[in-house]
Image (cartoon, rainbow, N blue to C red):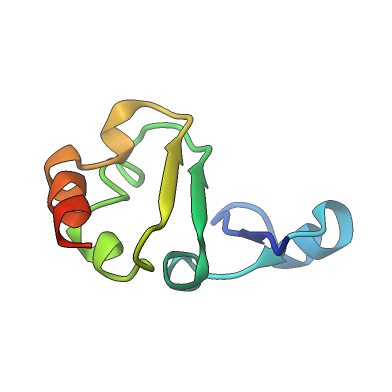
Length: 85
């Protein structure tokens, strides 16, 4: 399994050295992931981070696991994405 990760507050080199996760931008995560697991707090930067724009970049059949609060995912956009893909 290949693990991709993104964190705007953690330097990319720390991911490679301590966690073993390939650090990349969100677009790469959206484009290449079979499973996307959200582990972020709800704030102004993360609210609706999964929305029409991000869903349009995802592979068909991707699974999204939201371990945070509900508003990380725009539910109406998710329903449209499920119906369209």
